[in-house]
Length: 454
Ligand SMILES: Cc1cc2nc3c(=O)[nH]c(=O)nc-3n(C[C@H](O)[C@H](O)[C@H](O)COP(=O)(O)OP(=O)(O)OC[C@H]3O[C@@H](n4cnc5c(N)ncnc54)[C@H](O)[C@@H]3O)c2cc1C
Ligand SMILES: *[C@@H]1O[C@H](CO)[C@@H](O)[C@H](O)[C@H]1NC(C)=O
Ligand SMILES: *[C@@H]1O[C@H](CO)[C@@H](O)[C@H](O)[C@H]1NC(C)=O
Ligand SMILES: *[C@@H]1O[C@H](CO)[C@@H](O)[C@H](O)[C@H]1NC(C)=O
Image (cartoon, rainbow, N blue to C red):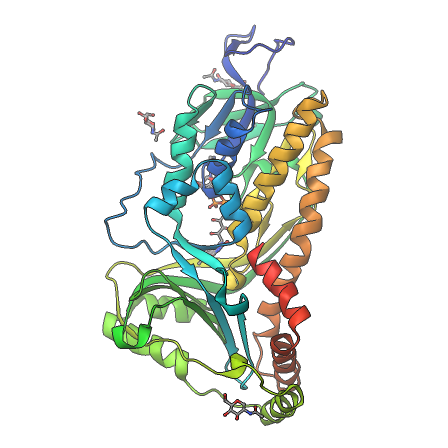
């Protein structure tokens, strides 16, 4: 067990009365992924919290940085407006803007068993629906902010958290962390940003609901047929019986793929020769699946009822894929996870440590950036009001804000996954009508748009 005997809070590393050394911080963030690193930057940039000493512990090796002149990376995220505002507020956006990203003007979602189609865009394409940004570029940008705040934020790489003890459980006033290599740290508030298998979450003892989707997401960087790509500003998603297939634009002639499918199929796609893979991909985008006639008829009726006044029903097709960049294919397991609470005395969760969703709506990391905003606001208000950083009474406000915002989105994403994993006719009928009604009823569509865009 770790022990911290110094009751008085000091602003520097403290040595406990026992022989072991324990460095003390105000806040320790466990996990330097997209969300944990952004949180470190946001804490440093908040005027009320800028005097807090923050330690960021990342289990993996040193982040190698990002080369904007190199080939596009296979891990990218659809980043919404709220997340971009967060980057702006921590001075990370100019760094991204100066490198490379692709604005998406429209999203087109359609399904395989009927003609149902939905298109998301702002009126007259006045502003972007989202931006596609490489994950490592985001990390590079937020790291730059963290480095600029080196006087109060310290980063340790190759620092894997082995175990954690929390004040409620030990009677100690501080949260404590022991690394795999034996080093010990203590803090007022430990924040778990350590992803879906969070060690911090496990120690918090919060109820967790999780599901394995038995699906994998295959990602890859693709070259498109130039004559079909246009300005390549549409994000395409087709729901297939095995899972959704999405093309996210990177440049005028390149897109990033997220293909969710069964585990055996994903493994097969991963090991195919490039030419064979490209054929399989093009086929998946245009293959005719068994039609549910009733659904098609119902859609025709629905569309004639609403009339097709605008260009809304002009079905477009995605550009075909010419090639896959060598070595860009990779697969990730997909699942759902919901922690019933994000806080306890001395600890809080952010990002995938608290919630994990299917990538079909491009929401995962955006929810995590939302957590960062709410947590920093809550901690700043709490510090201003004289609360201790790890006080549950105050942290509960963060919990409530996030659960209220995240749970409906998570249920929506899970519901869509479930709804589209079947070819059962009545379900196809209902979901096609649902999709088309959404397309036809601006208020509902606007509601969805707000969800997608933050
Ligand atoms: C195929 C795919 C496509 C996706 N596309 C999108 C998209 O378009 N838009 C979107 O919003 N989201 C998307 N997501 C989801 C998104 O990737 C995640 O939500 C996001 O990466 C979560 O970030 P995080 O920092 O919370 O967790 P992670 O990325 O899991 O980071 C956790 C970090 O903690 C470190 N760590 C773990 N354990 C320890 C430990 N014990 N000690 C120290 N460090 C530790 C890890 O090394 C890692 O760096 C996608 C996900 C997948 C699988
Ligand atoms: C960390 O704490 C553990 C348990 O109290 C102790 O065994 C270990 O020696 C400490 N490590 C260091 C480097 O002080
Ligand atoms: C990673 O750790 C090594 C030594 O442990 C250090 O020299 C290096 O600067 C660290 N890198 C970053 C990006 O923090
Ligand atoms: C509906 O849209 C199609 C394609 O844009 C067009 O050919 C047709 O005339 C439209 N019908 C009505 C009733 O507006």
